[in-house]
Structure formats: structure tokens, C-alpha cells
Image 1 (tube, helix red, strand yellow):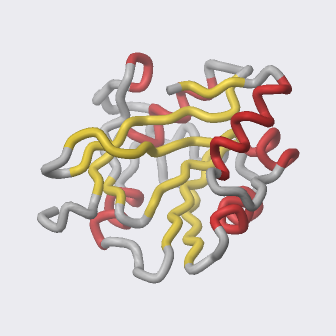
Image 2 (cartoon, one colour):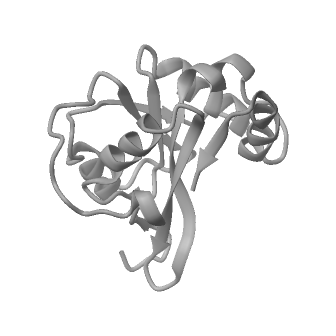
Length: 167
């Protein structure tokens, strides 16, 4: 993508780096993929990449023009029911085909984990943000608050319960 705005996800760092196929159809009931967009519609490449995820088809929810961010994140958790986990994808992100499956595998092997993160790489730039999978029940229990960094605030509060994140 020449605009520099889109990000190609390459789930990385240790346990999350892998490019093998497999797991077709195993996790679609446990995982919902949520695409978050504000103002602009999702990139066609983003939608195609979500539909092409290994281990799917997954239930896909699109949350658009929902402000502030805490409200959008809480809607993401609410609308992903009854799935146990939700993969959060920004609408300008193009996932590798194995991203959702590997994130689900990672969080499934760590009962103490409320979220797993995979590194994103921006064309022409390098490492950028992250794609995440959230375990719904602990996040739903606490809810995202309307603060500057909603995900950091969640981490600070949820870590008091002894839960951690995988990066």
C-alpha cells in the first residue's frame, strides 16, 4: 500500500511468529474479529484479509464511527458475544492469513492472560502498532474507561487481578 497509512500485520515476537497453515475451522465459535473504523470505511484489503484468515470463517463485526474510544472498545466486547475472545483490527490494517489463528493459539495456552499482542509493520516505515486478541470475560468485567489510553488503563487495572498480557 503506497499511502503509508495501511499496516500489514505480521504477528511477531516469540510464540506468535509463525507462518504455517493449519487449524482450519477449529476456533470460529470461540473468536470474533472486530474491525474498528472512524470516519473512513475499512480498506478493501483489510476486509479481504479478515475474510481470508486461517481457522475461520470467523464471525466478523464492524464498529464504525463510535466515539470516544472507550465506547468503541466496550461495544467491541459487547458485540462479540458469545465468543470467548475478540481480535481487534483497525480498519487500515491488513492481517497476515495466520494472524487470528496464532493469536488465539497463544491466548488459549495462557489461562492467566487477558490479551495477546502481535506486532504490526507499516509499509516504508517498519514496526508500528499492534493487533490484539482480548479474552472477553475479564475485560467485560472491568470495562474500558473514558481516559487517554484506554488499553493501558485496562492493563493497569486488570493486572491487579493477577492477569497479564502476552506480547
